[in-house]
Image 1 (spheres, rainbow, N blue to C red):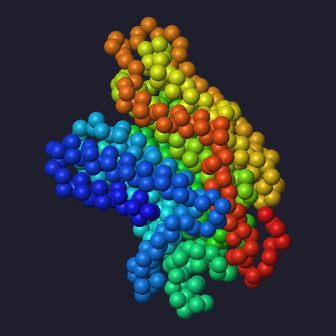
Image 2 (image 1 turned 90 degrees about the vertical axis):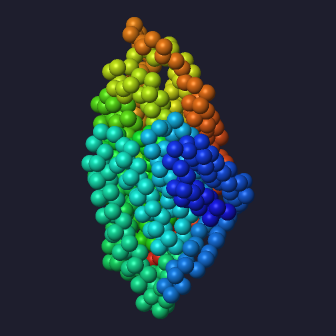
Amino acid sequence: MLTLIVFTPLIAALALLFVNKDDAETAHNISVGAAGFTFLVSLVLVSRFDSSLQGMQFAETLAWVPMFHINYQVGVDGISLWLVVLTAFISLIAVCFSLDRQVGFRNFMALLLALEAGTLGVFVALDLILFYVFWELMLVPAYFLIGIWGEGRRVYATTKFVLYTLVGSLLMLLAIIWLSLIHFEVTHEFSFDIQTLVHMKIDPADQVWLFLFFLSAFAIKIPIFPLHSWLPHAYISSPIPVLLILTGAMSKAGAYGIIRFCLPLFPDAVDKFGLVIAFGAATGIVYGAWIAIAQRDLKALVAYSSISHLGFIALGIFALNGEGIEGSVLQMVNHGIIASALFIIVGILEKKMGTRNLNDFRGLGKAMPLLYGMFMLVTLAALGLPGLNGFVGEFLILMGVWTSLVLADLSAIYVLMGGLSIVFAAIYMLYMFQGAMQEKNDHIPEGLTDINFREFGLLLPACVLVVLIGLYPKPFIDRVSPSVESILTLEKTINLHAGEDKGGHH
């Protein structure tokens, strides 16, 4: 089933290359069909998932390079399950949003589906080499999508994005090989199976370097402050459909990597650097929110707000307790839904008004009452209103940070920084919403119409999920909790230097 989910969009992307570039209808059908089918299969995955189990489910293994024990090995647990569904959902929305694109439609769709396949592969890969292959597969289509169809300083944005990501990726590849060599020294066999490697005892000195190499790739992808400078350029230059996958799904790959690999493999290093990395995450939370207040370009405003929200996710992970990590996983889903909806709204407004400058918007709610209501709901979710999904994730993360033993020395400060960012979020989100939708405007363009049926359909699922998760998050958390407990058990008791117990340090 997982192979079907990952390779359906990739096969569709290859199939599009054989479609006549002027045959838009066939390209439409293949793209929507592949993305829709992938999403439906991901829902079947949820329905068949056993939330009482801690281990991997739907596992598939196939020998790939037997000489070095490199396998095609995939599986999902409660942590990756929702990220797979989120990626499939957002990719379907991105494909549907792109259907009116005129220039290079076939190639654009092929690259968009390849980006979806790479992102899905990252969340299900259990072999480190396979993980690395999918990790790089995300980069290639993103480079071309931004570089060819982007706007503004797209060449600068893609160059900076690729250089940052490539450096981190190469360091991670070195760490992957190093890990396998450590396993070879003990067993005289290579292994890239994460489920095997987490049971190794790794020297604390080696853990430090291995952790930093892995973290460099993951922290750049999230990004954690101060490795964030590529994000605003890439986001502002990206076409909206690409941006939906970048912010909604691809940005979660870094946080997922930290949970899946760094915590169980390098517990000593996590303990050593956790406080510092949490400080970077907390700084990014406040920094992103503060800079967002000053933005007039709606795309830039949402981009900087993403830095803030992604910092929340990273902070929760390094709380190293159940509440923090569960909150982070839930917030990955929440941020994907909210940020994607906001970027769709930005795209709709730009299409109707011909600009993204907030100073040119006033009183649009009078002419667009349907968009007004949906925009308001997403805005309230983004600023963390109780009863909507943004509140649940942030509350769990702040509770995890407050009760964290690892962050005990600075936990109160980090909670205050998180609270300050929520205040800032209220400022910039209400400023954006009120500036565009409210206030009196005697110069609303003639003929300005509300969103059409297709645009309504793109926003409706996000609005429903915002309310559903906010009011009843239990089904989401129940599937995450056993897997988080398993990761924390590994982090505490398995991979300990000299095999000693930490005495409940966490």
